[in-house]
Amino acid sequence: MTYFAACFHTLFQREIHTGQIAILDSEEPMNRLLRRFSFLGSKIDWSQTLDHVSATSLVLNGDASVERAGFLRQYLPDNSPSAPVFYLNDNALSFTSRWQHNSLLALGETLLANIPQHHYFFDEQASWCLCLCSEGYMDFGRSQASGAPTKPLEHAER
Image 1 (cartoon, rainbow, N blue to C red):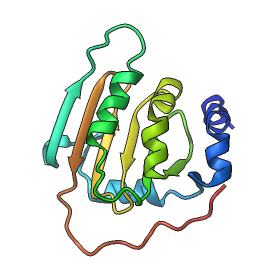
Image 2: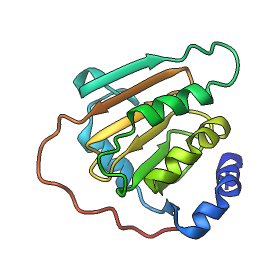
Image 3: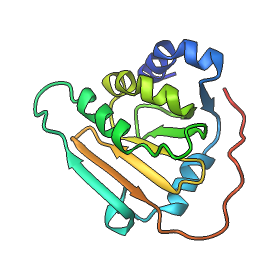
């Protein structure tokens, strides 16, 4: 287990134990995101999304986690607060996690303050994605991909 994976498990052990956060042992959530969004290299091509919102952190030196958590709270779709939110990180963590909506809102700042790199949050269908980058870029957009809804993500949990 990497340092940041251990940190994640330590920070959120109560929520993992109670099922508010589930660690998924599957690449399907990431693959679903890759199928639903256009990418330029390793990043989402936000110009190819609907309802795109972009911001850049005003914090030049220091902890931008408060500002990024504010963007997360502002743009995290709340039309279905009982629906899970999926989280993956491009480098520091080797797993995807599924969060209860209210847990993510309550603990987002802690997550962002302790786990580095790029943070991707999306719904089960990957119909929207919110990305918070360590360089200060914050983006939200909806997928232009059409098609039948995909099966629910029900994979083994660690």
